[in-house]
Image (cartoon, rainbow, N blue to C red; front, side):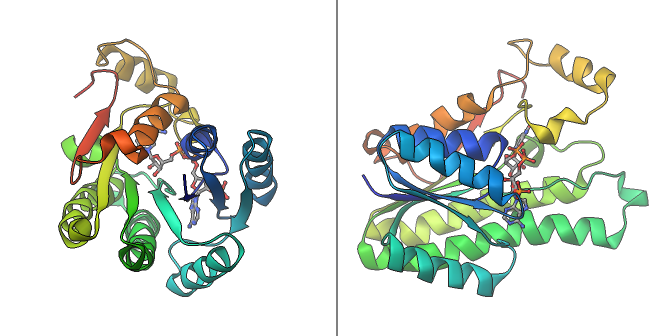
Length: 242
Ligand code: NDP
């Protein structure tokens, strides 16, 4: 068992991953951008499962803030064994109308943010000669999606980063994989128009949106000893949509 950092662990998929990894016996760092109370509540739930857990606010897109957070984690808990790059945002809009800021914000948080954590944690894991990294991509990054050119570029980028990091870190016994969820019931999808949601469900073999716990189960598997020979992969968890 080791220390697991879950970025964007205050809500939705990240919160479910934090709980699931705590259930597996890992100590947890619950990161958030601003909802500290929610992150603290998830950390409390993890502690109730018998592990050490702390909530920490920092912006993953800020490299210096990531460095500072990791120094604090190392001092208070130790070297991370698991990194789950889950923090993400959407700023949807059709390409021809998209503002530069919409594009930049999504790339900065979803792609550069994951890179910051991957680079810094990767260096620590290399010294420890062990580690598990799981990047939360999306099926949108694999097949594209109307109104999400920024998000799809970032999520496709995460898959390329996963494959490169897997090559660079593999010799030190570190695995790097991605999970690509389909439509999952969280705050991120709550605001979608009803007709869009119904249309999406028709394309899903299982006929429904997934639950955050169903993504957490895939992450927990990739983080487990049983997945020791799996690296550089993207595991699609979409109820049979793509
Ligand atoms: P939510 O919107 O429910 O939660 C997003 C989380 O990311 C929050 O914890 C938020 O913190 C955190 N966050 C946002 N920006 C930053 C930042 N700059 N630094 C640190 N943390 C940040 O999202 P979901 O749970 O739905 O999604 C989680 C991941 O799964 C995302 O990467 C998303 O792209 C991906 N995904 C989701 C799908 C879905 O259908 N829901 C489908 C495919 C992929 P705070 O609470 O403080 O705002």
